[in-house]
Length: 529
Image (cartoon, rainbow, N blue to C red; front, side, top):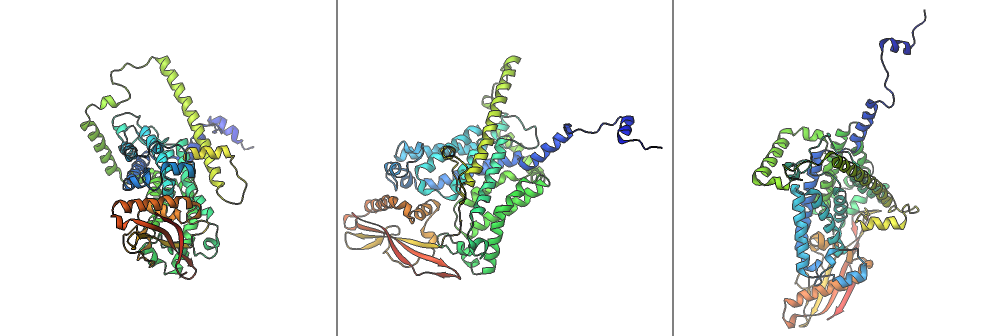
């Protein structure tokens, strides 16, 4: 007796095998894509708040130097900037007055506050991004690694649905509640690609043997007095520890980002990746003075927190959101006026509503296609920063990236940490024969300060002074020296006016085996007044 074939059995039992076009198979691919590129709504809301907080902190730091760095009376008048750098369009270049700069700072702060609470979120985020790009273009000498990351993170944030949870927009029903478990879209894909590129390109650019062969890169990085903190200097005594940190840092930057896009076990991958990369940034922060870089990177990293993280904290999160909605609706009883339309407004007739849906769907498809194409362009742009190959992007596309404020180059400690180190002496000879350091007011001396990093001041001042040590920034030294002389003369009598000013850099070179060269005075600029 012959055994029945499988098809005969299925025919008798009336069982139908799934075909490749079956919905179950389609859903599996959707699940894989959602695992790899989906973002939890609560994590997006938390990232929104964190980025807004970083902008407010950045503005608070910049506001302390408003006249010095953003007006024509400061270290870089607009005419000199335009002549030397040919900057992109900037609202901050329209006027060089203090009031104009202060007004733009206030507008950016207001937009950041709206973004923080999630009111008119997309508009507020767009305004924040535009004013951030404008402010950075006003004085490129102040840019640090954190400024680049913040700028590109804010660009992608404009297109992300940051207001579906924990926002006034959601509390006042200005946006629809999420119908999916997580967000999956072109903007999320672009933001994830951008985040991964920051680490991967930074790791790939670290091509020097001190990273791959000698494993002394962290030793050299912690030897830079410009950045070093006491904990970093203490840790740098142990060569075995710094060698291990060199290897861990390099491999984590290049291979670690894959944890955020695992097709399976994605929740655990993202949790492990989040802990590792936050730990990396906290390690930078406690051992080196890196400004706001670690804060910005952690804020950007928050979007990867999976739903499982929030499920461990259901009661606190739910209670906070309920309190948020109750407060918003209680304190603003006229919330109906903030909705998309009044409650009693008649709905549109079906044909118009259908046409509106078609137009919205079409515009969404065009936007998503543009974002996906832009993400690909950003990948090529970053690959072009790696030396040793022909450019992948034509000049026109590179110019478009730069016009959008998406130009980026993640060469921190790459190809190797710098070995040139040192500190400044701004020695002024006064009319009465005295000589003083204009930055401290004390008698000028070449003795090494107890903390070199402290003499550079906050992130803004440090970025400026570090740039001025390079020959490419020689033309900017004159404006800086003249600004210091003006500030001194305004606060001192005629007998103590500046007669001659010398900008001196005491240069040291960090060598192997904990060696440093003797300080060498280098005259960067001198002028008689």
